[in-house]
Amino acid sequence: GDSVTQMEGPVTLSEEAFLTINCTYTATGYPSLFWYVQYPGEGLQLLLKATKADDKGSNKGFEATYRKETTSFHLEKGSVQVSDSAVYFCALGRSGQLTFGSGTQLTVLP
Amino acid sequence: DADVTQTPRNRITKTGKRIMLECSQTKGHDRMYWYRQDPGLGLRLIYYSFDVKDINKGEISDGYSVSRQAQAKFSLSLESAIPNQTALYFCATSDSMGYEQYFGPGTRLTVT
Image (tube, rainbow over all chains, first blue to last red; front, side, top):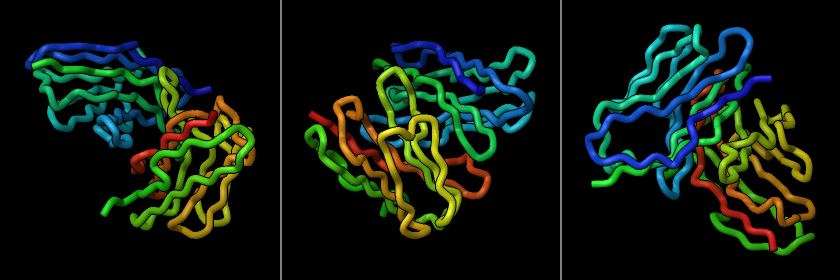
């Protein structure tokens, strides 16, 4: 079945550092890929998405590229802020359902 | 007002008790979902509903039941709560594609 594997956390960075959170997936066919973010005490929110190979999703300075050859969808941001501290979830979508990775806790220190 | 609301936000109950978690949405979406979140396990799908007459089991439905009372309302019941059902529960809704899901704020359930 479908599965998503995320880089284990927690990840702690200083403000303005470069962020990468790795995500790889196992699936047949061509699923859609997503990053969701969960701020403290809140539900998940869609951060970005990509629906086909080589698509790049971007939002709020975050980017991820759908790489079919490496079955990856790594999340990157060039300069993180304290307000980016949250849990980030990679997810795979098929037939109207989402399969989530285990989440990566990011803490950004001032 | 929030698009997806959940009640209660926090609940402590005892083993063997019946408990219902409620979810309401104002987005006009047909699809609704219940997930549980456990540390290190991400979110796992319990049940989902693509319209009022369509209810489907998810990955971890044992010990849970649901009711879709209306397009806007989807409740989750634990018929006889047990301690390993202690978790954070989220309701979500989506449009017909199902991928951009809108989550409620969650219900923290503790079973003692």
